[in-house]
Image (cartoon, rainbow, N blue to C red; front, side):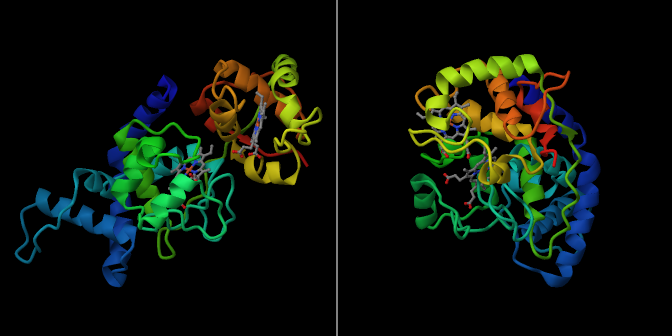
Length: 306
Ligand code: HEC
Ligand code: HEC
């Protein structure tokens, strides 16, 4: 993880205590009535226990069930900060109920959901095996996976390096736990700034593309002889350009491409390549450079001009 993300994570932590209380109230009130066995209910209960320990014990307080330190962090997590952190995922994952998969599967209801069970999604053999073995996305399993996807599920094709900061993971999972049919309505994602890049980046990106990418993806990005998919058109747009943050396309390209040397270039070269790809998808160069760090790219949205 690069320092910019850490810095961003640090700012997330600063807001930790503030919204956490508000969320706990919102989350636990309806839960007491419905007592649904969802991740949110579990998180609400765990939070109630934390409160019970911190205040003089009420006579009828039931004994505390086993709650790991991390589950308590999630129960007290800052949902708004978690939603902001989910921008790192939003290029590849949709979060709303019934929304189609993007590059990765839809994540509505993912907490306590079986692993690799999103209908119609073509999982890697590694993740499919974790699902076939009866894996469930518990809070702790999600925590391990989001810290290091490859370590938690060897062979996963999720091209994401992981989130080192524990509080950020807790906030993110607290947000994921709200994505249930009875859960808190997802607030609108923070509006991003439209993506920008310069003509100089496009020119450098074009030279690199012609040298290293064209044989697989085609001279006009329509797909090539060796089986690289088109980098324009409906399928590509649906994955990356429907208001997704620019970090998604950058992350995929800079971790998986070119296949014989994945991640082998400097970050600035991947930014050049993303700029070049965007010019083939209806975007035009401007005066601001496309940044080459993931946190800054996460704040830029890619919505094609009609
Ligand atoms: C660049 C694309 C990309 C990014 C960014 C990304 N994911 Fe994924 N994710 C995937 C893909 C692809 C898979 C399926 C992996 C496989 O089959 O091995 C996946 C799978 C998952 C799964 C398993 C879902 C299931 O149905 O079992 C979870 C949970 C998940 N991602 C959460 C996240 C979260 C949370 C983030 C943000 C912190 C994130 N991902 C970021 C692409 C991405
Ligand atoms: C040897 C052939 C090959 C070369 C060279 C290659 N790619 Fe790819 N590329 C692929 C294949 C195959 C996929 C699909 C992989 C997948 O979905 O996991 C892909 C996927 C992609 C995607 C994601 C497309 C999508 O629909 O999700 C992007 C973006 C991309 N490549 C960019 C590049 C860039 C930029 C270069 C040059 C630095 C490059 N590729 C070089 C074969 C290649």
